[in-house]
Amino acid sequence: MPNPSKKIILYFPSEFVERPLTNEIIQKFGLIVNIFSASISSDERGFLGIELSGNADKISEAVDFIKSQGIEVKPLGSRISRDEKKCVNCGVCISICPVNAIYQKDFEIFFDSEKCIACGSCIESCPFKAIFSGE
Ligand code: SF4
Ligand code: SF4
Image (tube, rainbow, N blue to C red; front, side, top):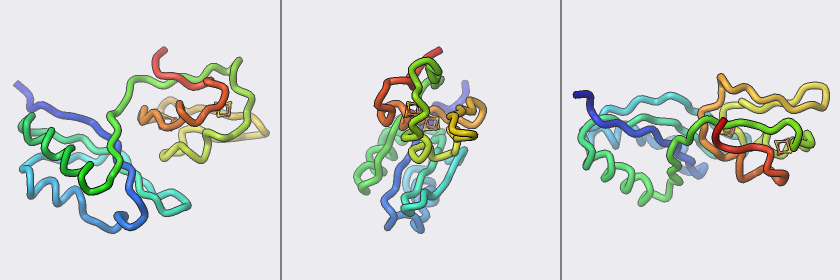
């Protein structure tokens, strides 16, 4: 039977960007940590998508530990969709996306579902409720 695993998204304040958090998790909890996405925003906030694999209790402990360090943790959501009829191309969601899955070209907004890692950040940002989780 495969090891339990959990995919999570971490949002770091700028002061944590240099911290070797994944090494800390490996050493403290004996988990396998797979990084599937990472970036630093223009305001120097860090973003990290990781998958934790190993003992289920240790995964929970590791998530609690990460939160206790002042790092925001979000579960990886399900598929993200955008309702083009509701979208007014305001561009608010572009700067929110940590992996540049939303972009603007010729004043029109485009959504690249291949790049999207379903972190869900853009859902809350849209004032017109044009982005949602699900098909
Ligand atoms: S859910 Fe939204 S913010 Fe997150 S990666 Fe996908 S498009 Fe970007
Ligand atoms: S925030 Fe909403 S309305 Fe504005 S561009 Fe993004 S999806 Fe469209």
